[in-house]
Amino acid sequence: MQKIIYRIYYFSSAIQHKLKKRVTISGFAVIFCLIFSASLGLDTNQSMTYQIFTFLVSIVLISIIYTLLFRYRFQGNRTLPKFATVGSKLKYRLVIHNKTNKIQTKLKLFENFADPRPTWKEFLETPEPGEDKRTDIDIKLGSYRWLWLVARKQCGTAKTIELPPLLPHSKTEIMGEITPIHRGVMRFIGMTVARPDPFGLLNACQTISLPQSLLILPKLYNLPPIQLPGFRKYQSGGVALASSVGDSEEFRSLREYRPGDSLRKIHWKSWAKIGKPIVKEEQDEFFVRHALILDTFQSVKYSETLESAISIAASLASEVQTQESLLDLMFVGNEAYCFTFGRGISHTEKMLEIMASVVACRDKSFDSLIPVVLDKISLLSGCICIFIAWDEQRKKLVSYLNKMGVNTLVLILTNNPDNLEKIEFRQYQLAKFHILKLDKIQEDLMQL
Image (cartoon, rainbow, N blue to C red):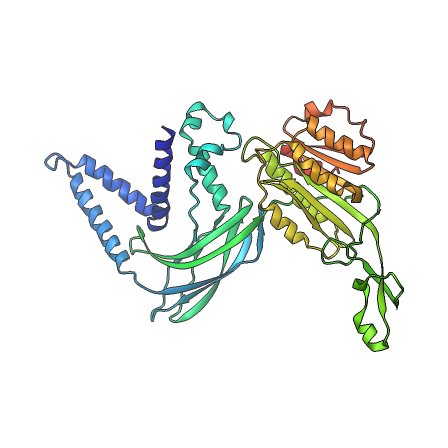
């Protein structure tokens, strides 16, 4: 039964998508009246309704013929930024080139997105957030799930643009507007120029192929100035001013070669100038290094709790100054990841780009994240943990960080704050806990 419902949604969605551009509101009204008059005017001897039916058919036929004659040529260009952010409207530049000999008026422009319809597997395995609160009929029909999945895959909406008069063989610049709704990649395949018929019933359409994509970053919260926990620590090999994490060190001075010096430290240009071996003297550095641990472990593919956790992590990454420190982003998706940012290694934009693609980990336990943390723990000055639950596995990680002397800021997202407020957190001397309610995240973050 669900397979049949899915196929109905799949094909009806395609028809609805086409009709939305080609038929105006007035057109739908006329078509409805046409069908209604046809049902009432079957007996022409007893009713004059057939005359209304004939009149409406004539109008619709004229509109169809008019749209078929719309063969004008247009070209377009879209200038998009590299990123957009959920919750922030994005304005971008469009250029439309009228390649005809006539001035074109009363035109509209629609953005065309890649097919957002979910696959059968996605429809079956991805419930809508809060679906358990809907009625049994709604759950069985899955209409709300379908609409939510389509919106999520499309990532946002684009405003229909009323074009100004387009002069013959000229280019006209206009501004478009996109409203990002979900993080991910928004994919465009082109744009459609539409012109209504004289009766305003149907739109004649010309499609311009223009594939492009836009990365939608997670929603960002406002944060107060945050003093991260921890102190400067010695970093093996030094990373100061390096372009990658490794055994690179900070340059201090030049000196003459001494027996036992590594050949890799010879400064060849100075040797060529002076005529005797010269080596580079370098020093290791002490500086601040924090870990940002993102909890992605849940049984479902999508949840508002995980999306909020990703947004908080993105907000912290944007807020934390990494020019004089390092920040290690640690999480588990399809596999365990650790990305390092700061001190010339990478930029915050790159971290946000990574977070836009984070997925839930459904086939591993929370313990699979611990080896990633242990690998860096001796280098860490402090740690920020963003948890979407609080259980024995997460307690184990915080306890271990506490024993290792790592100052930790723990943020726990929950729908039931009363259950967590009863828990005694004082046993973790180096950990500071904050409970964030899903419906008051922004307010709770301002209290950090």
